[in-house]
Every structure is written in structure tokens, then in C-alpha cells.
Length: 273
Image 1 (tube, one colour):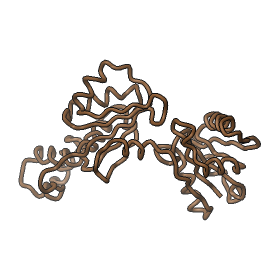
Image 2 (cartoon, one colour):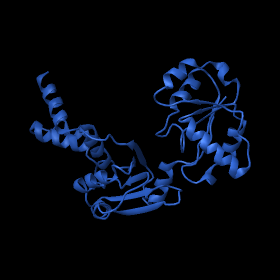
Image 3 (cartoon, one colour):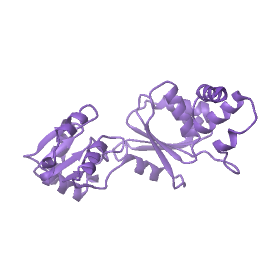
């Protein structure tokens, strides 16, 4: 069978007994990066006096997953097979989902061991009382798709959670400050590691603070949901309105996160039909 094993996102002691047992019993280990997994197993072996030798390792990531999937047969899983990504829970902003899907389609038994995950940890740390959140992963680096997705984040009635690299964190905070300076943002870096640190303030105050910081580490960004007053405006409320297409396009773009230009063109296309 296949077992998906979460690995520590920082602190080695976050590895569970079930995960250690699955890794010890594994005969074949699929890894996002074999070098990272081998290094982790060496550290775990030293810390807990374990033996992870005699394992077969194969890489499985976004660049080779089709090739690997095509090579699989049910016989592959007659042995104990494990998949682990570089850190955290497989399939959550990490490879592994296509391997699970292959097992479902081919009736191969599989299991997922609960464990370390930066999204859930940051959500719990944020102190936002909302019970709903949307995870957006990493935003596109630039362009209209990034702007559109960021508008979607800021217009969401749910808490929004993003991953961000240290190289683009200041850019993100600057964008948030320009669009919604009073919106409350929670930031946490290096979850469970030695230099873990949290920040919670308005986008405006965070930008003033971070513009002079030497930003390092991996970050999770948790954004306060959009506060609505009264009844929520729905798309169906706007479409029938007898107003100028440009104004209607602005309203729809604000509601959906799409660009005004593309919404306006869609409205014109409908009018021509």
C-alpha cells in the first residue's frame, strides 16, 4: 500500500511515532527531493537511534510525475511504499496529489498520516475568530493574474492564507498597504524553528515596519476577511441593473476579483449577441 507521511516543517520533534514507524517499515520511499529526505532520515536516525538503511529512494515531483505514474503497476504497491515531500503535509502546496489519484483509480489502498502543516498552524496562531478560511498558496510573481488573485483575496468573506518567500514579502505588504491599509494582517516566519516570529497589525503599520527590516525565512500570511455591512451583494443583483456597462464592469470586477477590462469586454460581447 501507499502511505503519505508528513515531515517536520522545522522542529525534528514534530515527527510522530506513526510517521517514524511508516518510514522504518518502508521499502520504497518516493520523495519530492531524495537529498532532502535522506538528510532528514539521517538526522532522525541520529536523534532517535534508528536505522533507515536498506531503503530504495525515488524522486517524485512536478517535473517527473507523469513519467513515474506511467511506470507504476499494482505490483509496485505489494511492498510498503511511502511518499513524503520536503517538509510538511504532502499534497498541500506540495506534490503527491497525482499519486493519490492514481491509487484511487487503480484501487490501491493508501493512507495519510496526520502531521505538521504550516497552513493550519498559522491559522490557529493568527487569533482571527472566523471558522472559515481559503488557502491560496503562492500568488503569481507578477502581472494581471497576480493583481486579480490579490483582489479575490481582499474581497473574500473568509480568512485568506498565503505562502510567501522572503524575496517578495515586502512587495506583498506594499500591495496590501496600497489597496487596504487598515486591513489587519498576521505574519509568521519560520514556523516551529528557532527564529519563529509573529506580527499582527494593519497593512499600513506592517509596511512601515518591514520596509526597514532585513527579511529572511519562509513566511505564512493570514489576512483578515472583508467585513460586510448588511446584506451581501451578489452577482445576480448587478447583472440586471440598467446602468452604464463601464460602471457595471467596475462593480462586477470588485465583487469577483476579475479585471475591469475583461469584465467590460464580456459585457460588450453579450450585448452584441
